Amino acid sequence: MKKNICVILLTAVFMLTSGCSSLKNITNPKPSIGSEQSQNSDGSSKNTKENSSAYTIKDYYPFKENVRYEFQGSGNEYASYWTTVDYLKNNRIQLRTNNGGTETVRVLENKDGMLKNIFTREETYFREDYTSKQASKEDILLKEPLVKGTAWTSAEGKKRYISNVDLEVKTPAGVYKALEVTTEGDGFKDISYYALNTGLVKTLYASNGLEVTSILSKLQENSPLTQNVKFYYPDSTGDKIYYVTKKLTFNTNDITKALIEKTLKEAPNKNTQKVLGTNVKIKSLYLNNNVVYVDFSKELVSEMNAGSGFEAMLLKCITNTLGDYYKVDKVYITIENEPYSSGHIAMKKGEAFSVSTKGITEIKK
Image (tube, rainbow, N blue to C red; front, side):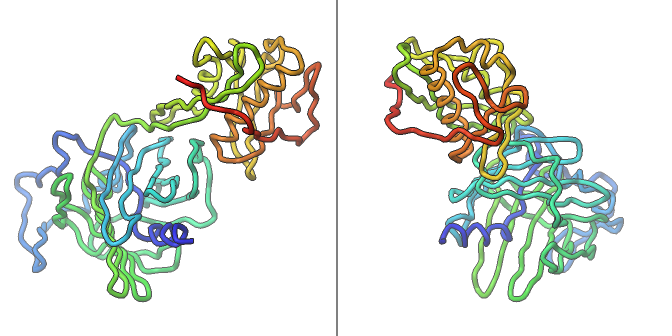
């Protein structure tokens, strides 16, 4: 319950990040020579030509691959988090955020002068491409023109507006000139700061004396996602099943099923056997209603060349590997879109295999 409350709170606290600037110079570029500037009463710089109006959302929220943002937080144990980029497809980006309590993926879209959050899925510890999803409720995070006073309504019906431009924001990662976007509700304010060529650099949530802040502390380019994944293999005699935890590395847009397929074709040591034959292909892999659906090419059966007992072991290895990765206990295996069937085992349409790890131990290194 405590974690769920914090997850709900942090949904309002931070708008997920994307985009980056060079690690050698992550602060904003200075205004061009010849621009007319003066100072506002609040200390922010003022440009008589309305500096920000010449920029677009792409400038303040660039989409880039293999970027990792780290934020340090205060005011809540889940205010610190990191964000990476799972997928980048045209004008959409899928972000993954881990705050120590849960892992959430979101899809943002930059279209028609608006940056919108169009899809959110919490408790998502696996990689799956959701960039084609369209949620029924869209939340506008930024809207052009990027000038003070531009206003719109959030998905929750709250007033959201650009409250300032060209504000100086100090973070452990650098000093930025940023847009300030404020969301106002009953008894709270949620403020986000977006920096030119960088993206989100700070959020502040204030309500009834409570303040929760997340500030950019580190920005890393060329930083792929790494996941620890359990893979299950039969031993060399075909009597037992063991598991080994392998570290998988995913760059932006890498295909999850391809890396899982490759790893299942490699026995971890001489005392184990590979699970898939050389020519076997995973044709599709996805989660639906807490069941993993995986479709193999016909070579899964033709290259298995096993008796009924060993075939059952191989199917258990596949089921346990995929079930553990997706954190579910049912895996529906098909061959060329037909229910699994061989000379020994025949499954009915819709009949799934069940995860079973009883008696399975880790491979001793």
